[in-house]
Amino acid sequence: MSGQDGGGGSAGAAGTDPCPLTAEEVTAALGATVENDGTGCSFYPPDEGTNPRAVLVRLPPLACEDVEATGLAHEPYDGLGVDAYLYSAPAVPARILVCTDAPFDLSTEIAGDEAASRAATEGLARLVLEGG
Image 1: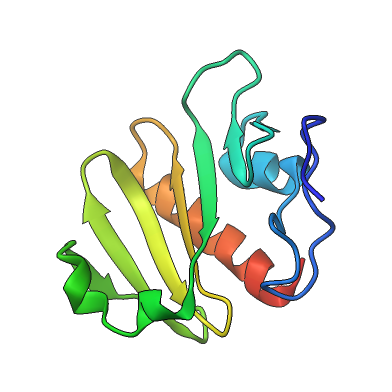
Image 2 (image 1 turned 45 degrees about the vertical axis):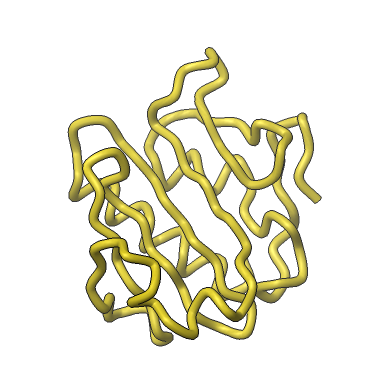
């Protein structure tokens, strides 16, 4: 289970662990050292900075029932093997809503590199979907 030590849960099936990612997995995806901030599944640099960062939020199934109702700009995102949507927002260049039995929203940011942010988000989403 996630904790202040910067670890994360040992990844089980999506929905079985509040944070299925470890600090080591997120560090590898972002290319810079990050720690779990101890409040859930948010990872930030150890120096209290805000970039790079990754945040995973578990959502109720209702979140995927009407994606249009969110009012956020989005587009279907292929390649994960499940229904997923990429959200577009200047503040978060790579945010994906992943619709499974245990939906989640995952975002990353690597300053100044939208392509790397999207690649990191997709890679971390795959880890969650694969159960680690």
